[in-house]
Amino acid sequence: MSYLAQGASVGVRHPVRGDREAFFELRRASEAFHRPWEPASAVEDPYTEQAWDLFLAGHGAAARRMRYLLFRRADDALVGLVNVSEIVRGCFLSAYLGYWIGAPFARQGFMREGLGLVVRHCFDELGLHRLEANIRPENVASLALVRALGFRREGLSPRYLQIDGAWRDHERWAILADD
Image (cartoon, rainbow, N blue to C red; front, side, top):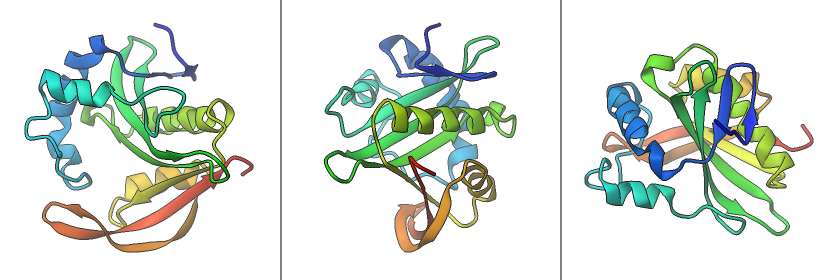
């Protein structure tokens, strides 16, 4: 498999049409695991061909969103996803990060390595200056992840996202290219 970036255990690349079934299978297997942390899907049925087409749309040099799939290099199993969204060019050179690991692969170091590879790719290849991750204060694992990668806590965003029927507070963490 050809990767944009790779570490000892994880390879990273953009999704392609042929990833659909593996992606949907991992998402289905991880729904309960992700429920406390993710907003509801804006798509009525997120497991359709149309939903996959929307997921794949928007990549390219001028894109405001890039998606990166994470694969375990030992067997090329899909383990997770990193979204880089709301990419702003010009004098800002900033974006937001969102990420998830499949439930069967949690707490094995894959996301730490994969997110680190994507962060480095965003700085070195996309030329971004700043990346921000917004995380619920109760998500101890995600807070530990960004802290370990060198992100700094910038503050609290009250009622930031609607999740599970309520507006939830999020901690705002960021990392700069020169950190």
